[in-house]
Image (cartoon, helix red, strand yellow):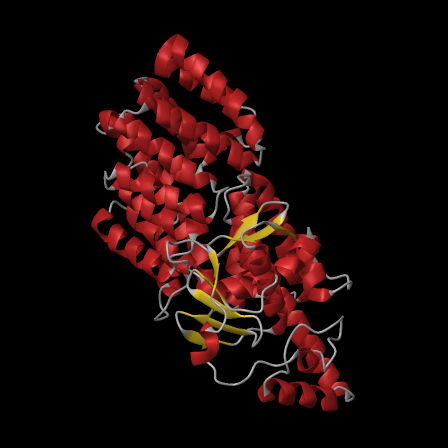
Length: 492
């Protein structure tokens, strides 16, 4: 396979999405603007473009970038993250580079070769010859790049001259460690917010490793707190809350740390005043982090301030068009505003960006319920289960068949019984109290829905904060028991 890719290598430039890549000059342009890429990221981009849309396994990419040198997995992830920051979003939304789970990466946009000579108007300088390109050998194999620009040579020369001094070496190692921590944090948050239980466990490991490298890193503390809360284990909520508080005490300027604390206090603690204070601090910067906007949108929705949620959610998507969680926040805002088809569309957009996002299937299933489309609700619920548990696609067919048989025999009531039986297989069954209440209300069993909501006052499932605005409970909204539930949550 690698040999075939080498045969496909062309000396002419290629265009792809918003980008244009000149393999001879090693020059990247995005929307016509030249961008400087680190040379390892350039090698990664070249290997992906050579594949012309085929999946490039991780091992093959590592070979192309580092030769035979053994490197950590996070190094490749950092190269991909660098390319995405430079290129994304793609013209149609989403990313230029698609992650193929457990395999590798591929260019997700069409790659087109420019006719030979088309670059002559862009650059009148003659192309380097093969001898020129290979004059300075690559430190890990034969060079494929031209002579570096002067500013790169100057930086490299300065580093070489200083490398012999203990202070310079110490600073260099500190820089390496800080760079590694940044990669661990980026990967950890991607996994933590991806809607997959197994990924949350892996995210916790990355946050712990970041803390091992820097025990005082506040964002790593906050990440570990968020992962603990998202795991759904009730005994871990108090520990997660305390860890999040320690993080903001250590770094009061960290807006994302405040956002995570506010989210935990709101979602699991129902400590609305303290949550609002934390979220206010998260929103203080002129350009607050995405997580601050997401948490603020959830706070506004839960407090029945729906007219404020949609503009803020649209601002989030506009500023972070390639962020799946942004699309999901907009889907949630549409859902609670009664715009169910818009909620489904935004959920689908989130799946384009992050195909294993279980929350997207949750909002699709909930919206289909409100629209009376039982078949679509059933299918989305099956996909939500598969993605949350990290099951293979092959698990979809038998699960879907079982749900369809139940529905065919007894309609919504029988389907709800099948869903409850399936949810009971999860470790954190208390987290499903709210879901069971929604399903019972959908099937018309209002007494059972109230029973589950009252049980949720003890287990505190995440979506419980939306009880006051959830359209599923419209038929029981005036029931004294329902109003008592809202008072228990602190929403009345």
